Image (cartoon, rainbow, N blue to C red; front, side):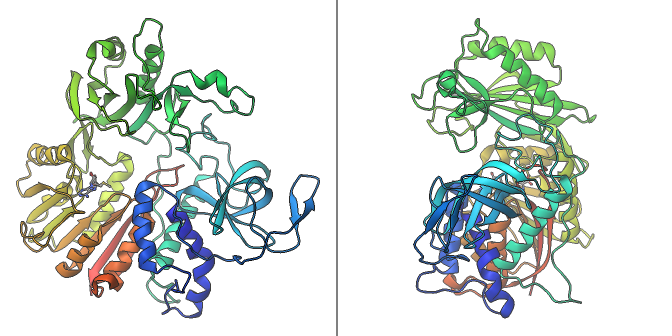
Length: 575
Ligand SMILES: C[S@@+](CC[C@H](N)C(=O)[O-])C[C@H]1O[C@@H](n2cnc3c(N)ncnc32)[C@H](O)[C@@H]1O
């Protein structure tokens, strides 16, 4: 993953150069090292595609020594005389030093300092691992075999699936250690990717302590499960049972790194408790001998059921409501009817059951068509005193409890004058939530969003909350032209909340020219956020544009306990 590469670079290569001269770039461009900007382009692409970057980045311990292995000790661990590159399948003893982006543990091979990344290794943990992949000699990935001595902050993960499912990678790390690790990651990225120096004693530190989440289980209001024809349970391969499960269908979560294997899940400790009741009913019904539904097979592209998305909200009285979305490969409502009846007979909180039809061979859950099987096409959620309608395919903050706090931080950063005179531009506005929560205190809100359903929800939400000064415009912010900005007056405050790839350079150029007095950058990917902050503050050299803003604050917020995801609210002011 590019971001892991970035972290490796930031942590192990850059600091030496950086600390010795704070004004110097943390990355030096040499004949064999790509420029920072080349690397950043790779970052956007790789982050979006969730692919591993193959960019050549020198890291500590890298040299051209030929590996020299001298033998094995009684654990089967190979010992060495010189620096070496580990080989695929080699077993090595490692100590995890810190957590990188996406929750991978960073370790170094003792003799050489060669960097190794391991999923689910915790800081301080000593373990044996098998080298699974070499990344063109830059770093290696390793699979943990067994723990020799655990980290002091290890706890017993309450979920039976924690060790295997891709969702909760750090459930076995005490929560205070999880948030500490996240805060360190953001700080590292802001320093090394964003090129914001560590400030000396007495100066104002723009890094704020992370805001932890008080609710650490059952906080997700949305979960997407997949149907598949290859059920997988831990130990299947080890015990030689792989073939036994090969033809068994399952509903659950994808086994990490496998597009076709499904880990059956009956109860998820992150999702709303009522959503777990719905999941249990669907699990009970869909494989019943009398049922005539089949799971979609990603190899043969046959079968009916693709995904099950469960979304929880609240009505105006604050009572829980639920939306169930069956994503299927074709429209055959009669096949779903028995499951629908079972759900509505047993769970009165379910106010919406929809069926999205997705005929593509890809793994997306967004339908080309949507049919209502029961109730409404939307559910509602309450946030900061407003009521929002949310459709099946619209973005809504996944942790409502922590979203209240996130939006409060955004409002504080906006530092509104309170006289109703300001113009707010809400970029990547989703269902309009951020702009609408500010609308009653400003003159006008202009929201931009690419998903038509989300724009329709935003307009309906404005009406529903009696807000007349908010306008929502459908458009792709990666494809803006020179005329972007003609549809709204010059804003005083820009709020930008892009998804993981961050902002396109076209949008960065627009913001550099715009010179709004304040930008609030809300991010779910601190690596691309740090890159964009660098462009906005230090300039965009490829367009020959100087920076226009000053970084005033970076506030990490933990929206997703037990997962590697980190949210940040960053404040920029015009220089
Ligand atoms: C992280 S969400 C933020 C939504 C909203 N600000 C909120 O807090 O609920 C990012 C939003 O950007 C939208 N988006 C993604 N790419 C976009 C693009 N190229 N142009 C416009 N909107 C985009 C997504 O559909 C999504 O609604």
